[in-house]
Length: 407
Image 1 (cartoon, one colour):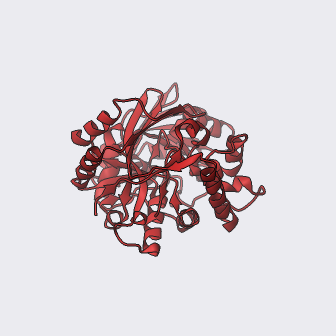
Image 2 (image 1 turned 180 degrees about the horizontal axis):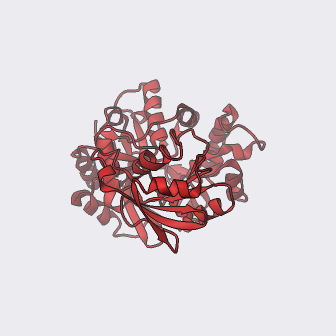
Image 3 (image 1 turned 90 degrees about the horizontal axis):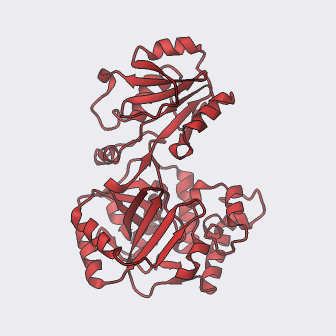
């Protein structure tokens, strides 16, 4: 079976797309989602965060939430706001954030290739989050949250996608967060066939974000067991060329200095890093460089070259900081579970680091150089796992532009 295939998407009629499109389900809590959906009866948040239509305080994993999501999906279909395409298509999706734009292919990706690691992973998943996505898919018989994938950029695919975007998009909107979303339908059989074959010649594609959604897709496919050609044996994805993808820094803040004074910490850091005072906030300029905000002062830390290993996980900046500073000096042994550490996406800026420390909530902050797509793919190719909170992708895919029905 092919690596990717077209599918008959369930999507808003073009004139209602702006009413439907919503942020991804996992970037808002229930209160934020309720506020964003206020006065918008067809916001996709009523499907992806259906607890907003139930009493406040409802457990988002309560069976009533999944039932409400299915009810809301049916209402939107019955109202004609969502309609399913009559035949399988590919779709082209362009995201724009300021000066940055990335254009990828919306496709159904093979569960079989996910299971055999041709669709490559770089993170562990948590059972509770997997279970949540499985219940959502089963309740709706539909995958509503796309997995963000990447392919190693190649001219053949990039040129095919560029040709599709030579005409005006069917949907072109700017969401309330300022992110632009443009959407084209690819229903020409010749173009569909060329895209399918071009991807099938690829050795691998890579999960950038959406490990729980892809794992849930695999579990649902196994449970349904409808055969390799069934639509349930594929999961919803958007696949971008790796050179266009934007990873922001994923910064760290720590509550205390593990019993050390400010000077004691600086002295210990200086054994493994070059330490320089800076007059303004430090945005690291290269790998191996870190900003540190401590006691109202910014420092630039540069790790000694002999501390950088060759292996694809150990050489990541998040690993270098963890292995040479956070664990041995600050006692952060498991960043997944240690309540003393928190993580701040780079979209919030370095001022957020200063705010968390100046308030007294945190004692020290570290700004990071963003992980590269090349490093992510190297980890996945080595069948290794990245440390938690290694990547922050922007802009985020919207929910609601297209969904994948499993029959």
